[in-house]
Image (tube, rainbow, N blue to C red; front, top):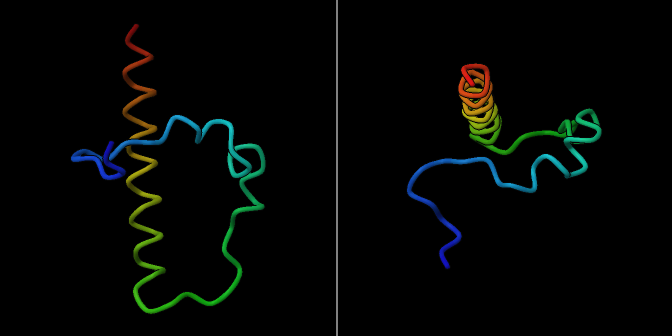
Length: 61
């Protein structure tokens, strides 16, 4: 089984992890390495878009 997928998706265990239970505990408070801040912002945007699409799909039902 490959750890990499051809399409981005949210792992199934996201809804049960410590960041889901307490999002503030997962906020980075230190310095970022070069390019890391931009990557984190892009990843947050991607995950937010996936969540929005999932909400829209479920609202249609």
